[in-house]
Length: 138
Image (cartoon, rainbow, N blue to C red; front, side, top):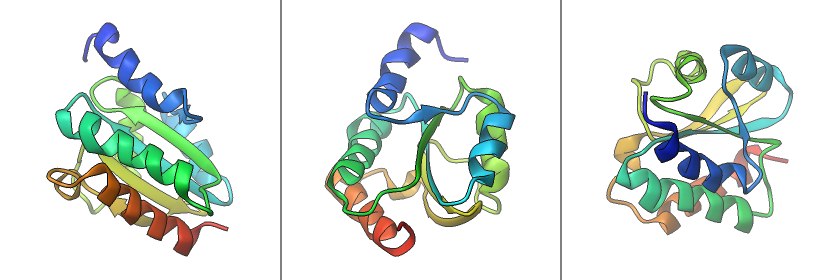
């Protein structure tokens, strides 16, 4: 587990922008069982999360005409129960943090793994997500 004083500001970068935290397995199941689309960000303390993943996600949400029904996040190494449950829904993909998933009616339809975040700009992440929003969100 990471220390709370390190994690909280990183969580707030998303929660202060409308993302709801999923802290338990039941939070994950409830969110993913809802109709519509759910953007799930597995947040992390790593540099690529701070430098491109979180900024790219926020850029996409703020600049897309179509948006997911639910904006959610859980923190790897901190929200352990929720992240474990999310990763069950991401199979057969291996655990990856940070990562960004889009679910539609409970089904994974788009996934950006860490290796697709590292070395890419926030703008590239945003463009990738905006394309997915256009395709899957109403």
